[in-house]
Every structure is written in structure tokens, then in C-alpha cells.
Length: 329
Image (cartoon, rainbow, N blue to C red; front, side, top):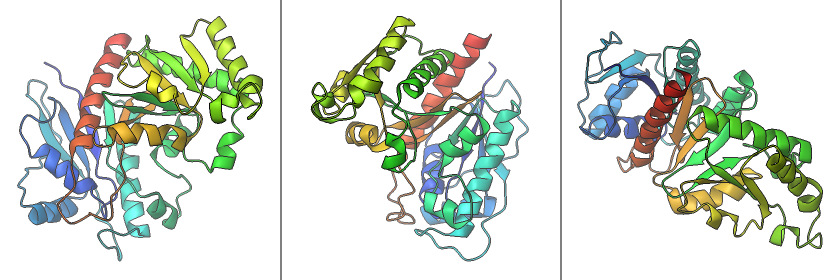
């Protein structure tokens, strides 16, 4: 059996990324069969193993296709300079970006079917002088139109905008922008075997504007975009009041909610799926997933981090990459 090659980046070395990776790969049978490549520092991972009492063999990347699966390391430089566990720093930011950049480069060249990213610190990236706010923004610079989505057994969610200040996010709620987004989202879902999903779109204002009494965006921008998308054949409805729209997607595998800005969607999603949720980047030529949580600096180095969200991210990357490959063949 030909197994896919999946890249896993170590994330911010000062956060819980290295810990949850080692925990996930040290438990037999927890992850699907694949050729896994870790992108990080051998010195860093060996230090983390000693702290956790984990012994994990990290070999080279010479795979054979008849293996049951393997784990290898793409050994990159350890963070230089002064940095400490559990706190943001320019050094750790540069290291986490280097791990991510290398994995994305290999995926772009067709060497990886998917990239699974452990959490990074946006503050550390900023301190290091990087212009991107996070993983999705970097991917969007390479593949314009990349969509930030979230997946769990209980809910699926897509975001119109990513990490933007609220004032900037609200400026994107225009009928033409929304229609392009709905159409692009549907195309992206088709490419990962999710063409049948129904989209339910959130309104912006209380009660979805209450007929214009509480705001006009629903009638002036959102509803016209939804109606034009329906006329084009999309399975889509809305705008629905923001305080109830997520109930339409909860525990309904065939439905995906569409939120108009970051926190509108993430508050609902993380309330029901924080431990098992997965961040998915749609619109790329490869699959990219990550846990839906951050670096958890407050517990970094304590050994308390739970790897379940990372495991779910790896499982989903395996599932979506297999579906994508099948559709292309």
C-alpha cells in the first residue's frame, strides 16, 4: 500500500507544540498509517523527550513504499539567542516560522500530501519582524483566497475573514465580496470531497437586523449575495440571526456555518469542540490542518498538555488528503 507523506511542524518551541507532538507519536495506534516527517530541531525534541520521559526514535527520510508507516525528522536549526519556555520571543518566532516555511515549501513541490502545524505565537512572529499575522495569512500570500475553516464531529465552520481587527473585518461585508467567497468556498469543499455540504450564513446584527431596524447589512449586502449564490446553484441559506445560526450546524454533519468575522464563529465552535476541533486551510494545492488551540504558554513545560486536538488534526489531514487524491485521479 502506498502511504501518504504528511509533514508535521513543531510550532513555537516555547509553547506546547513539541510536547503534544511527542505525546501523539509515542502512543501506538493513536494515529493513522502514513509516512510522517517532523519539521523541527533534533536538539529541541530530544530535550523535550528527556523532560517528558518519552523515548521516540527519529530516523532519516529514506522511506520505502511497502512500509506500514514511519516517522522521520527534518532537522532544522535550534532557536538561537535568548528565549524561554512559556513566553513569546523573536528567537522562538523565527524558529517556528522556519519549520513552517520549510514544510510548506516541500508541500508546494509535491513532496507532502498535507501539512499539520503545531501552534505558533502571533506575538513571537511579530517580535521577529514577520509581516504575517499567522499561518493562514502566510498561506494566503502564496495562494490568494485561502479560507480559514474549522472542523469537528459536532460542527463545521468557515470564516469570511481571518485575523483582522473587527473594524477591518466589517468592511468586507459587501455583496460582491460575499458572493465570491461563497462560490470559492463551494469550489474548495468540492476539492476535498465535501461538495454536498449545505452552507448556513450568519447575519451581522442582532436578530439579523430585524428588517432593518437593528442594522441594514443583512438586507443591503448579505441577503442579496445569498440569493445570487442560490440562483447559481449553491446549497446556501441565510442570513440567520447570529445567536441561533450555529444551532443549525450543530450535530449536523451535512451543514457548515459561515461566520462573518473571526470571533463570531470561533466563540461558538470552541465552546463545543475546544478539545477536538481542527483548523483547516481550504483553497491550497495540499491539505493543511492544525489544532484549534494556541501555544498555551501558561502550561508549557509542565507536561499537562493534551495532544487530542493535534491527533484530530492529523486524522483529518489524512482523510481529506486521501479524498483529494482520489478526486484528482
